[in-house]
Length: 57
Image 1 (cartoon, rainbow, N blue to C red):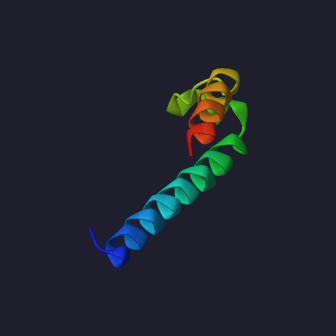
Image 2 (cartoon, rainbow, N blue to C red):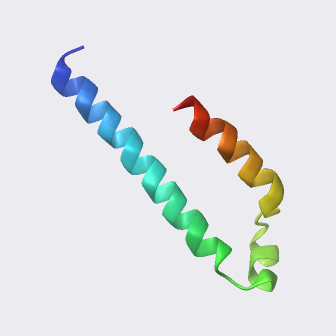
């Protein structure tokens, strides 16, 4: 693996994480009724999972 490939892979992971967070922030700002309609999970359990994931990186 070249340095260029490693940097490209790292940046693509960072972009994917940023896009996921942006989507989550957008959905969290929707009214509760809409979040329920689309089946968005409860925020308390999701935040705990994200906290563990973030510590690994």
